[in-house]
Image 1 (cartoon, rainbow, N blue to C red):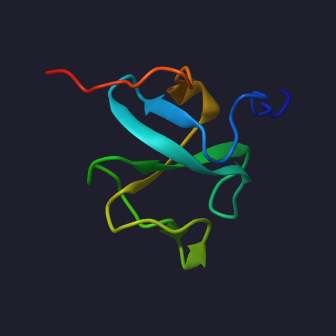
Image 2: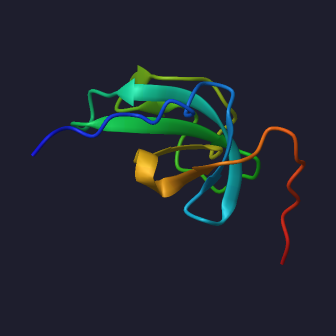
Length: 89
């Protein structure tokens, strides 16, 4: 079983939809010390996250408390850069 790689369009600063529901901005993409494989650190637009970019004492990126979340690349959808997406619901 090979380690998944990060899609080319997942880069720091990219706007994404996390788990089909939460808007955010990629702040970190790569390996971590807390789990094997590739991870994407996202700063969510709303305080729906689990951290502030620090996991197990290591800072991966900076953001406000409860705005940071780490997800697998398969759990994000890159948003078109030329469209403003508004949350509905």
